[in-house]
Length: 111
Image (cartoon, rainbow, N blue to C red):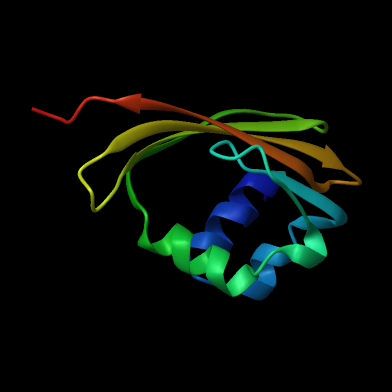
């Protein structure tokens, strides 16, 4: 099973332990909306899982994976009515997610 499959399975099953195991000890997350970088030890994984589960993911697609990188794409709908296209890019180290950066673009509401 690829790392993307393990990560997605853990997220879908709300398995925080398996989800965290997909991340390197030196993991860092760069948040697109603020540019803030969070280190592994600074992330509230319970809160992160709650947010991911609560997000209304309209579409989730796998774009590319190799030993160095995973690229995925999502369309998210928020309770506010806003929608965005989100592209998480995960750089890998030692077979685990080491650095995640996201980029988001607002998209119009579905008609």
